[in-house]
Length: 80
Image (tube, rainbow, N blue to C red):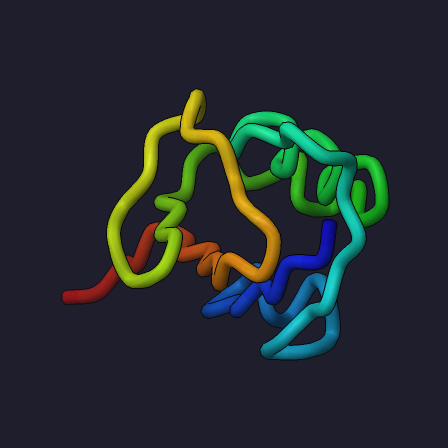
C-alpha cells in the first residue's frame, strides 16, 4: 500500500526530505512502519522516541494503517 509520510525536526534532516512517499506491506501497523523506516534510514534508530500521527490524530504502535493514510513522524522537541 502507498503511504505519505510527513517528517519533522531531526527526522526530516535524517531522511533529507519533509515528505516521503512509501510503499509498505498490506496490514502494516505503526510499529511495523517504524521498523521499515529504521531499516531504510538507520540513523532513525538513534531517536529514542517520537510521536506518530495518522490523518492528524496521534496513533499507537498497534494502529493498523490503511492505503493512502497520511502519517507524520514528530520527534521530541527541546527548548528553553
